[in-house]
Length: 367
Ligand SMILES: [Zn+2]
Image (tube, rainbow, N blue to C red; front, side, top):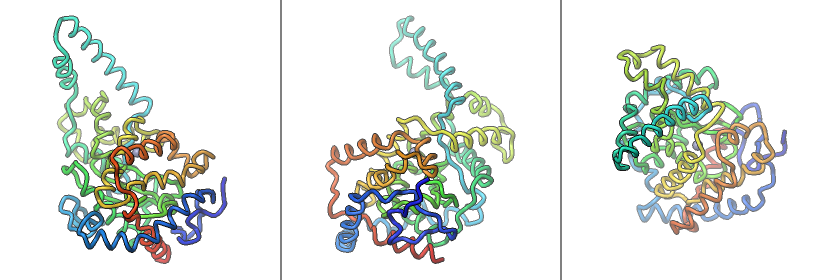
């Protein structure tokens, strides 16, 4: 276990009262220089963006679709912790078994001389899609179960800050039929989750290993991307157990055996496995897009993953979860870098808000 001081330990107090050490080894000199340089430019570029009424000023805008009153504190605690990385082995088996049947039927259709549009129609009609209400009900169920697994990280300053950044980023996403909620989990593990229905969770360990607001924005964007891309929902919709439940009238009543079963299944996948790599790369791209649209530097995810790379490659226990549920870190870095290059996104002159992140986390640690 790497117990060296974290890269942020010089300027950011630990959030944990227990004084846990960062999992990030003191190796990313290049990254430190990058962040130090960025910190110097935050004041000028951030102020400029605000004066121009562009980009980061979205942070200050009211956000009707992700409004502050969208959920009460009490409900939020009840709903705490849901997520959904679907795509594990048994669900995959169910999916592939089902899909195999569809493929065979599709082939037979081709043999009968029907065109591809007919095949597509047949496949699309095979599964009943989840409604938003059903998705949210599943998310709440998972949340209730997750409470037993993690504790909430009760820190008002950190919570308010994450919520504010999250709302700014969520404002930029395509999907508006769900409300995006943000909560913190009290664990050293470095990870974040997106639950069905828009419930986003980040761990204390993650906050302790982020250096700037742009990094936080990219990570929250990644999670929002899972929700807006319906990555988990699409996989749930192909599961035979889920489909069977959709035909039962009482499946979505609170406390139903169906919700319990689906919730357990989702929870197991959240903790142990992840979505397929295609979904993760898509979430990275969406997240970078949202964060950039919100006004941040577009390389927040690259910066974060770069700081985490050494810990992940050394199989540090606190990053094992991240490594297990996401694709190879170097591949993710390269893909986001390629996106920034392809889109010709502006990097220099855009704020990463290093200073504000550091100050907020320091204040949160003293709470
Ligand atoms: Zn992900």
